[in-house]
Each structure stands twice: as structure tokens, then as C-alpha cells.
Amino acid sequence: MSASRCLPGAPTARAVTRTVCGLLPAVLLAAALAGCGASTAPDGTAAAPATLVTAAGTALPDVRNATDLTRAPVSSAGQGTAPTGLVTRDLVAGQGAQAGVSSTVSIRYSGVLWRNGKEFDSTWTGGDGQPVSFPLAQTIPGFGRGISGMKVGGRRQIVIPPDLGYGPSGGQPPTILADDTLVFVVDLVAVEATDRLGATPGAGGASGEQ
Image (tube, rainbow, N blue to C red; front, side):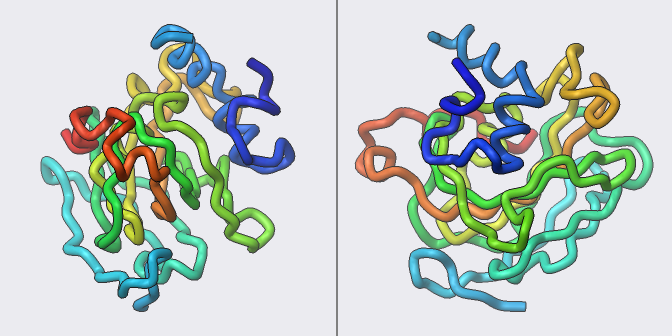
């Protein structure tokens, strides 16, 4: 599968295409092995700030613009040892349709490295904040599992350890290394209608928090 076709509806020039298709061959490998302030939520409801949660005593990176869905989230670098398991925290609690690990979703997101806070990918690049759509089953395991359980209108921070990210092959050295922990902040804009109607499996997958 070429980089220009692996994310339906995503222009090839976008950073998300470089990350999910170009920089991250482990994503396509996983798909092949599997079978081939306040703001308004996208559905028009009020976006409710959610309680911030840390897992296993880990202090997660701070996020600037954490609850303002109209602005790009800006994550800081992690402090200390990164968590060894997948960790999520909801910055804004969504109130719309719920995504499953195999859903096709429309999202906005940014991704930085835990070790230095350097952004390696973002749909906010250029300031337009246009969402991209693709099946979570075609992404790295930690990304799909981290989004699973989110509701439309939500914003979630997802910390992905290397074994659920790009594994021993890394992403694209020297930018993303084999042992890099990734920190994403994801806005769930929409879940495909087939998912909402229950025709697409996914709700029974990993919860996204370990």
C-alpha cells in the first residue's frame, strides 16, 4: 500500500500522512499482519472538562490549551521515567458517539516525544486544524487502543510505550527512535456512521488504559 492511499481522505502533503504511512512502516506492517477554556464539541454539545487522572503515580506531561478545542494542544516533555504501559487521561469529556479500537474516525491530533517534547506530527500544522479520517485498525496498536472508549467532542492525552508504538524498528531515526515513548493529544471529531449503528466491531477491544 502506498503512502498516498493508506489514509483515505488525507492529503499526502499532510504531516499525518508522513507519520502514519511514511515515517512509521510498523503501522502498515501491523495492518498487513491483521489481514491485509471551554469550547463547543463538534456535535454541537458543550464540551465538559474532565477530571485529570494520572496512572501508577506517573506525572504526565502538561498540555497547554488543554480544554480549548479550537486551539492546538501543546504538550511539554515528560519528566522522569516514562510509563511502561499505555496511559490515557481525558482533558475534555466527549458527549457524542463512542469510538472502538477498530472504528474509522475523524480526528485532530498532535504527537510529541516524551524525552524532549519535540513535535513530530500534527494535523494542526499551518494553523488550519483540519481533521483527518482513517481506520484505527491501520494505526500503531497504542494509538487505536488509546482512542478506544473516547466520545465525540472529547480531547484525550495518550502516552504510548515503545512496544505499542513503533517497536524495535523505531520510526524515522534520528527523529523517532526505537525506544521512544510517544505522547499524543487527540480530539475525536466524528465516528463513522457504521460504527455508531454497531455494524463495525471495535467496542470490545482494549480500553486504552492500562
